[in-house]
Image 1 (cartoon, rainbow, N blue to C red):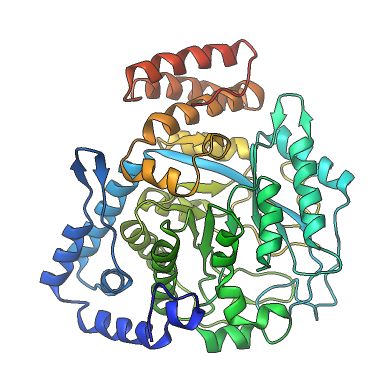
Image 2: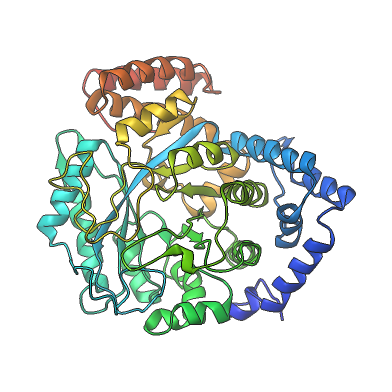
Length: 482
């Protein structure tokens, strides 16, 4: 029985409800009147508190995803852009993954880190190596990391992860500092989530991979990750452990995308129903080639047009969530989907353990890669590309550090008031990047962008203060924030 308030995985991600939803969507995919009604419901509306959106249920959203009427699909894309602009503006937050260890006891058939893979070298960073990686990332200009590690209670216990977080925060190199560490590790206990919270992590991220239980168990034939319920209920334990912000995601290509889409939105509805706050982020990775992994083996792959439609429908359905597209995707694909709802992207990513220190921008080790990186540009190139497209690359971490997390962040985001914080913070952190790390060409483009965008800060006092802070950054001071 479907129950979004249940704490049991098979009740809040209910197989029969998903099948009924897909049947309903298929039946109504050419129902113009219904689709127009759904799109109208999702439009941003100005209220006395600001701009608000109702979002959509998983069933309504599934109708949009199934829609085959070209002009209504274009309306979806226009609406997704409008919603994204209303709550996230033209800011794109930058981050990089940092792989700590590829030791893993699971046998996930789509991941090269699986236990039975004997061709991939196993590696675990020492704290000295973690520090070296952080320095390399700081020298690029990064301020926000997402740490990754395989599941191995012997080699990668929670205390090792916590020690790595402490090391990352401790490294101050030149003007560099990692100001926020997000964590993407295996489902764990409430006690261990409390340890992550105490270590001052940002967002806890865990990809479901697939919401289809039967497929999930086949794709994870052995190891602790085989337990579908334990994995699917992890976000509830994380929130019980005090973590305010959690990030969802599926690995598109493992199962039929319409099934995954419905399950993903049901999970978001569950978090809202139980905890009063939905997912802080939603990621949309697609399966990629890697050591001993051929994505062609999985016959549920999606093309770029379908991928774009999924992103637009998520933005319309969960308007306040951050949306992440990684360097799994090519420059051309990222260019296509960013305007449809994406608010965070990675830059200059390495998916190898120890992939940054000692390597130049055009060098990258492949022996311990988790997957092929499609967008291999340097961070400077990605920043310049975003600015040329009219976006503000943001290295901001202020909300975490000011306590604007969980329901506090969402209450500001839902009324559009977050703009008075995020817009100036984006410009100030971009100014830091330009002063400390950018090429002369990137700096010239960025200085003009900042001058133009300062005018768009809604609040006059915030605008004046941001201008003063930006001048102080030019004079050598760092880390101002609203």
